[in-house]
Amino acid sequence: MLPSFAVSLAALLAALYLVWFCFRPSSLLKTCVKTASVLLLVVAAALVNAPVALIVALALCAIGDFFLSLEGERSFLAGVAAFAAGHIAYIVLFISHPASDSAGVPVWAIAVLFLFAAIMMALLYRHAGSLRFAVLAYVLVIAGMGVAAMSVPSSGALWLALPAALMFMASDTVLATEMFLLRSDHPLRKVTPFIVWALYWLAQLGFLLAFAPL
Image (cartoon, rainbow, N blue to C red; front, top):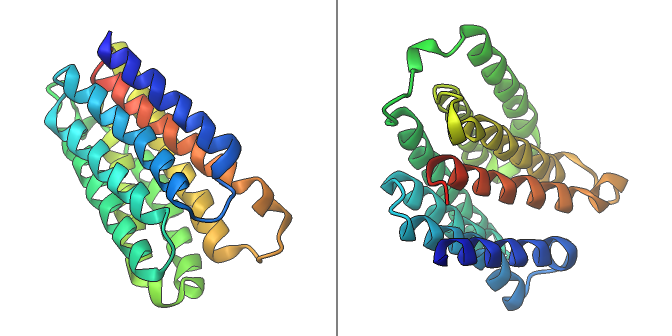
């Protein structure tokens, strides 16, 4: 009962953030709503004795949300570092699962994923300025997370792991495009905040449901 309540409250806050806060300037309330919507997933995972790696990954992402909701380059770098650490925790979660089969991941799928990562890195290198090296390192880490997710079997609730990983990657791709590649007056900027948040939060929920069915 308690885990379901935590997830329901998290979903309510996530929906509130989507329709009201995601496109608005930084504020204390925005930071609280954004962070709490993932932090409550941490609570739900802990209450059902989920794998430690899942709890750590969700917690690190909540920390990343906190920092990315603030303004300034230092806050951005702290957020990127927290999310990178979160992806590493997800990699540990995926490859340490008893049914994980890293050797069974198709070579062509790995090649496609890293080709896409290489294209994004080439684009971001030219446009990310002083943040380029942090951003490039992050792209490599999240690509590794995507590859690791392919090792998780599609049986039971675990089938959610790969779609969740792909949604996470898509969310970060849209965010990077918005931040570094789109003009400030580009019409797509009217919709990108909604896409980024919806894909991101659903990805976190997918990971929770895959590895800690409620």
